[in-house]
Image 1: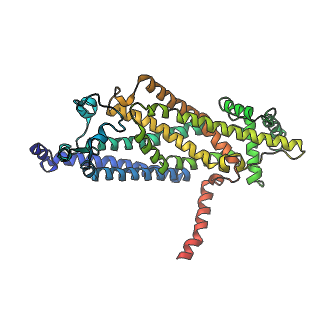
Image 2: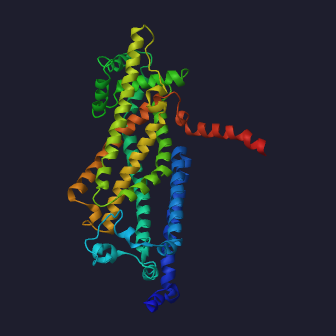
Length: 442
């Protein structure tokens, strides 16, 4: 065995093989790096600062993945030589239970063994632990599979967020026609007519909280945002934050805020990595964790959508009360309408939902490619179909309902968002603000 390992080492590998393999890896890396660099120059040229920052965030995530990959590679030998009693790896928190002691790992995971890539031989670590009557903490093969899973998770998360933002952005662009119509009827009774229609939300629901929440739940599926909603919220925002500019382009503003949020949602925050660790811990045979977890993003999406619709109804109720008191009826943006008086909580929930659904898809494809369709981790066929259906439902709900609602309704907080100014104005203000500080430090 030692002679076989020595013959397969780098010092006995033909130089042309090493050079060709190294060349292709370097070439692919350089092409990817230059492509990202060129994309960044295009975004800068078109003054798409928010998307450019999203690209920079993506590069940071790639760097983090590279660092994780480096750590797994450097310390894989050390981890595989850590020994623990056999009891802890044979009976405690197993994703797949062994049917008999006589079966080898190859009998449990034939596809994984047939397709695995051997970076080092595992026999040395196994012999080292067996002499102590123990087993390795984590085999080199398991480390390699974990390495692949982390990479697949990050890639699927970025692609999934991109698809969601593109589809959601397409839905929001449909409101551009409303913006143009409002801009052309600022001096007419057109806006007042939509105010009247908007206030109709409040009639009959003022003192019935249960019915109000029920109405909010069902409204998100049909006419989640109407022209009357858009018109009333737009005027409320402009009167609160841009009273001297009634022709302020509200639609362009919310599109800029969507781009600003995208650069944040494409990243994987620390609490999302903590979620991954918790799931890997609880993915135990018989618990069906993977199955029950697939319902979480759907439930959270419905809760978030209901809350956002309820904010619209509450604003309409306030306008109705103003009219009854003889006051000027208008939407009054306030943080009071959001959970814990913080509209950002909605963003964190949507961020978690997108990541969790991406995690579901990434885990499914990783198991499928690594262990095969009939792996015990896959569980029953009915569970698999249910999880895939839940993933599709989340994609549709988030892209066409929840995300557009979030972009519009969260503008009704007490403060405006970063996208209030156009990209070039925001860049100039940022430079101006940091200028005196830099000069003073110099």
